[in-house]
Image 1 (cartoon, one colour):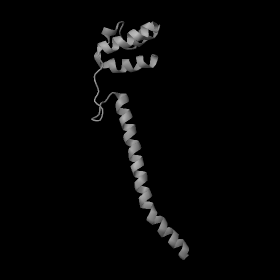
Image 2 (cartoon, helix red, strand yellow):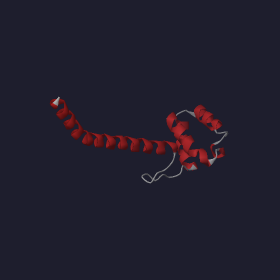
Image 3 (tube, helix red, strand yellow):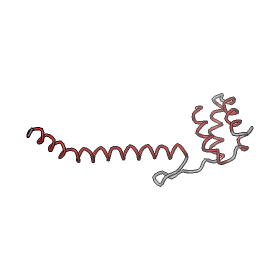
Image 4 (cartoon, one colour):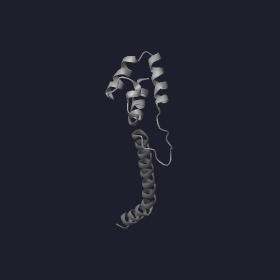
Length: 105
């Protein structure tokens, strides 16, 4: 019985150090996932300044896709946003549209 108590006491003495390490690791994982969610959702955090997507950036990306023969996919993307041409797409959707265009190629 004494041996059991000693083992329990030694386990309790080691546990706070392990617990603190586990908490730090869990906090680091949470911080990484929240940063990834911010980047994906388009929300810029204080750790990463983000420039707005411009019409010129979109034209450059789409020109590369046209040269790669992806005209049909480009037209389908534009129709998803209710537009026939790139300038007809509202600017608030440029970030999403650029992300979808990057998936194409």
